[in-house]
Image (cartoon, rainbow, N blue to C red; front, side, top):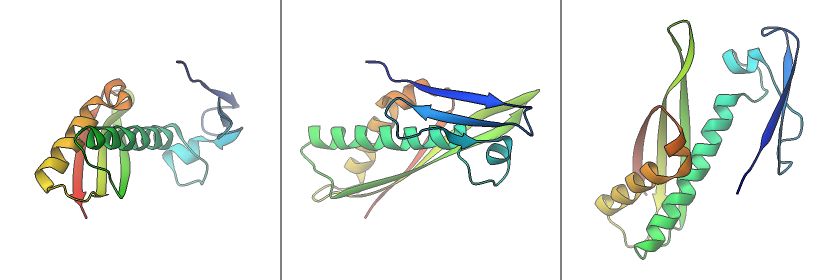
Length: 140
């Protein structure tokens, strides 16, 4: 299975602008700029998309791990925070923190954390990221 996305860019780094498109069409010429990446402009940016991909992948993986253990979540909600920091002569994604809240009937905190840590270690996006990935798991 292969999935793709594409990017186009016009202009200089700081004054230019780009657009992102995904194979599914969910993103279609979605704008991104230097200001959205390093400032507060409302367009998207690569780090935000990595955070969305990681949150989605991890949450799906956790649903699978829970199911394999005989649990079905009423709800799982994950916020992924990607840290982009100046490192050496450029920038690097140095960490990802996952904040998870789940409502899972019949599970205790220890089993919930064990399942969450298994999903964190084994979701495909976690495996591809070369950054410190941390997790806070809260059982509601």
